[in-house]
Image 1 (cartoon, one colour):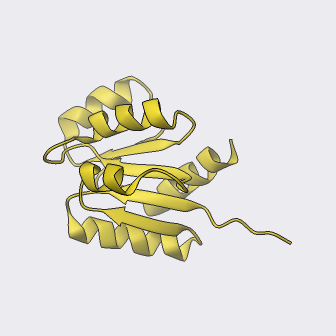
Image 2: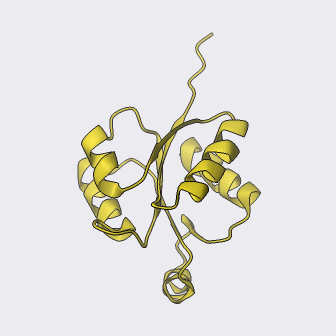
Image 3: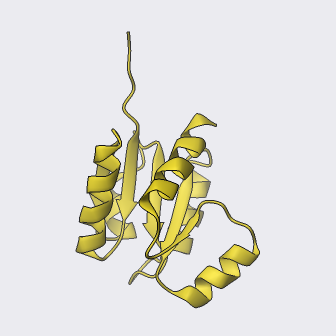
Amino acid sequence: MCTHKYIVAVVDDDPRLLESLEDLLESAGYGVRSFPSAVALMQAGLAGLDLLITDIGMPGLDGFELRDLVNRERPELPVFLITGRHEIADQIRARAVESFFCKPFDGQALLAAIARALRR
């Protein structure tokens, strides 16, 4: 019997949030690769990843720019956006984007959304 452990990449410049998301995802059985910036992720490469969670507001490449790069390179890779900036959150919610979460977010809701995205 072959069991695949899904690998989730998390990109955020806040080390506390990275650690918190690592703990949450690992407790749900996911493998986690964490990166402090979009550049660090792109240097490591997207191979082997099943889903990406990225903060929007980061120095250098922001989460929107990272999402666009990933969509060009791996269009099938689900990308979740997170932010603590509520003015951005309101704009995104108005577009009914389901792969978007505003900090602080409900960990169980995030895990449920990840599970749905990985079943597709």
